[in-house]
Amino acid sequence: MRAVVQRVTRARVTVDARITGEIRAGVLILLGVARTDNPEAGAYLAEKIANLRIFPDAAGKMNLSLLEVKGAALVVSQFTLYGDTRGGRRPSYIQAAAPEQASALYEEFVRALRALGVAVETGVFQAHMEVEMVNDGPVTILLDSEKTI
Image 1 (cartoon, helix red, strand yellow):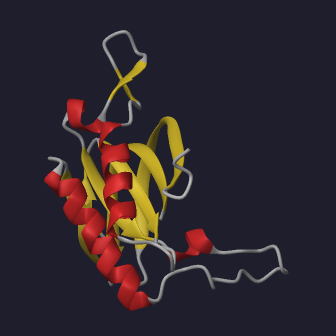
Image 2: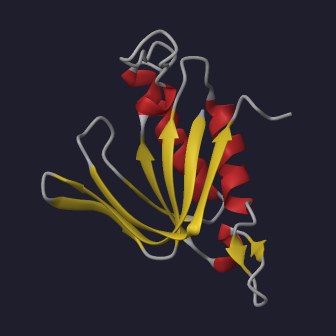
């Protein structure tokens, strides 16, 4: 599983002119699911993201986690995170999970994040979404559940 985590002051997802998810301060998470992923990968990333120390403390140092600042998460499915352009100019998505598997693991990730106490909003799986956000910092972190060492 891959995640692009962006610290935001606000973010929202719109599908067919309807807001499906919206948060104030917290993180926007673009989440990609690989064919080889399992629920443990989602639980690992959820715990990692909830506890990443990417929010400023009183001294302005990035020292606080999403849980500590009581921030929210907006989770958006993003299969293109598994786009491979090594073979040409058109990305190959062969490493991305099939929609049924990806949807189930995406939902499992959302459940894991909520179970940790994070308020979570979402986009709509497999929909064409418009994602708006104000990146705070900017702070953007790339995470991959396969890179745990």
